[in-house]
Length: 615
Image 1 (cartoon, rainbow, N blue to C red):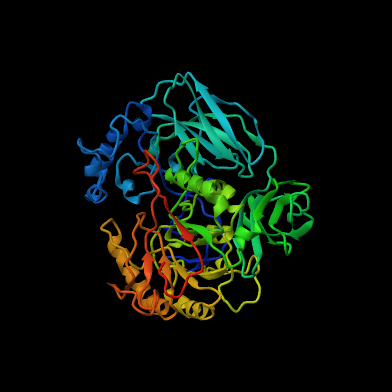
Image 2: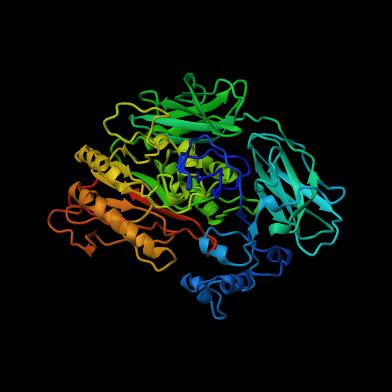
């Protein structure tokens, strides 16, 4: 999204082109209908090269740099002064670090985070190009670690760095998929974990950063053996009880994509042909429905085709996915992002996200579904980071339904239809999110569910789904609230509380929270708007709990109504007040106290809720 064409249109950087939404041009009021492809302008580079080039730098050194460089006293608001003080016990002063680029937006003010403009790259080697060697010229499967080596690089005053690109990329118009700085110019290597992005891969060597970067070397092309291999699968509930929607991706030249399923690994004879749609310039996304055989304990499936290859066979528990009025658990989190195990630099890197997804994988046999309440990948226009996120959640999302809500980093962009006119989506305008995550249709009166006629595809990403004992209504805090009020009232009115005793409402931004961090004042205004729009409905229909993310901290309210704590009284919990978890619990693994985009929480449902109980 974002203008484009003519003068002053803001666009985004991506290793390959991404389709954008319908937006109004800021100058001549013309409209650009998608698919419209943008080329990148400016992206940010991670911490300055000297942090990588001098390994003796440790955590406290880096924290001091961040604290000193941040402008407008924002470092004080984030508590850096306490964190990096000489008497601080919060960090080990000798702990070595791998510099990573945090998703915390204020760090962009710091001088180490220099602007990188592809259009300023000098794309020709000064004489002959340096040869980079790779340990494999063929990439097999959906992902592979590729080692890139160099030796005897001439001394240069500014750093060398190695970037991974697709062979079709114009390096003067797009950013690298990922990159690493060269520490030892005499001889060295870097390992790159590469995904199958449906095109061959090449590695380029550059010297200098910012507006001085120049191409000085390249590798041989690494060819993909199977560009149409099915990858990035994920499940979702539909509007129909007992039914699941399976989505996955291939390259563009696919044939006869389908899902085969049945009650056991040796009996997957049922077939559901997939519907397909363009995801971006070199990749298609496919969707097909599955429904378990009546009386079966498991649903086993595989997806793909004879020509393009098949996924491995996976099995899910029917009793866990669709429990019959019995205790069950689910996982809910928000603001996760993605991280690559090779620790390469990317536009937005969230190391703690790995801890969260690993924790969910360990719990996977005990949960019914996952609910991700917005700020999904933080890709913000970088398709490679969507790819990495989808790969990171695949082992979760192919075993349980992965339900989502849209957040500011998926949708917000000026003049694009979002009501929060920020630049937070990087120009995606919800298109990448809507293509990847198709949720049930928004109207409870719709009798059926179509893979491409759901709420998400029409830029109305509010919906609901019912699970035995629990009804979940998902709102969008990034769209017009007036549009959603009538839908939400009708949705809540139709819930039979004798059958479904628990009702939960979910949205990305919180209705109640405390905080003094940058942007908190604006978010308090949004919170007030959300309360004015929805709180009367939530009370009228006795909603039990409201969950949100956005603030990367754990907060929980008392039972509250109109901003005041309430006693539950004789009428039982939910009659007088609501419980809000406005900011879900952040998961901080060891040595990851700062560079965390991740919030997560685990909510167990112990039994059907008695009328007088409290959550």
